[in-house]
Length: 364
Image 1: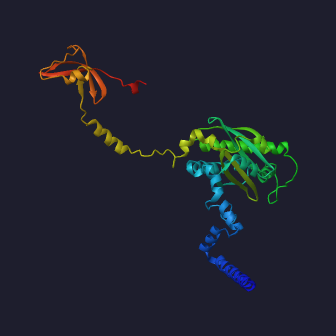
Image 2: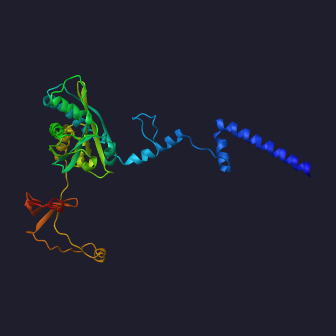
Image 3: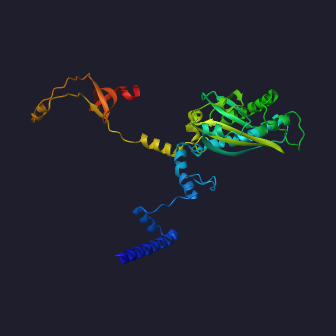
C-alpha cells in the first residue's frame, strides 16, 4: 500500500509539471486554451496597463484626431460636436480677418490673428483647465438674451500692456508672478476686449444681427460662471502674434446662447435653401393651373335611417327641403369650395357662384 501511495504521488507531480508546461506554452499564443482554463476556474490573468487604457479610452499615445473609444467615448457622447453647425467656421473666419485689421489699428503694430481650433467642452471642465493668471471677460448677446466668456491669457495681457505703453521690440514682456493685475492692465485689456466684441458682432451680422455687450472683467474663474458646469459649450481658440510677442484669446459660447440661431448655423453656406428650384416651381405652377378639377353641386343633404333606405323601391320619392332660391354648395371631393344659386342657361342647368366658402383650417 505504501508503494502504491508513493507511485500515485509521483504520477501527480509529473502530471502537474506537464500541466504547468502546457500553460506556459499556451500563454504565448493560445487563446482558446486560456478561455477553457478560465471556464474551469483556474485562470488568474490580469490586464496590463495598455489594455486598461484601451478599455477606458484614455490612451495617452493616441493622437487627438483619433476617435475616442471605451468609457471615455460614453462619457463624451452627450457633447454636441461643433461640426454640426457648419456656419460657425465661416463666422469665425470672418472674425479672424476683421480682428487682424482692428488690432493693428488698436496697437499700431504688426498683428497676425489665426484660428487655432474649435472644440466642444463642458463648462465646468473648461473652467478647471484655464491656466492662471488670466482675465475672464463676461459678455452678453443682447438679442439672444444669454452670455458668453472671453479668456485672455497672461502672455497676451503683458504683451498688450508692453505694446500700448511703448515697450521695446525684441525684449520679452516682464512677467511678475504672484501679484494681482493692476488697474492700468485691467483698463488696457478691457479696451482690447471691446475691440474684439465689436468685431464678433460684425462677424455675425450677415447671419443674424446681434450686439455683444461687455458685462464685467474677472480674474477668478468662480466669479465668471455663466452656465451650469455640465452644460455643453463651444470653445474657440485664437492666436494673436505681434512679431516676437503675443498670446491666446479663447471665446466660450454655450450652446444655449446659440439656440436662437441654431437653424441658421446648420446651413452649409450663407443663404442656402435646400430643395428650391425656381424653374421647376414655375413649371409645376403652370401645370397645376391647367389641371381639370371635378366640382359637385350638392342640392341638399338628408340623413335617413338605414332601414328606410333598405325599403326603397323603384318609384319611391325622396322629398328635399330645398327650393329654386336655396343656396347650392359646390364641393371638390369632400372639401366645400363655393356657394351659389341654381338656374338655367342656354337650355342647361347652371349654378352661379355667389361667394367662396372658408375652410376651418384657413379661418383659424
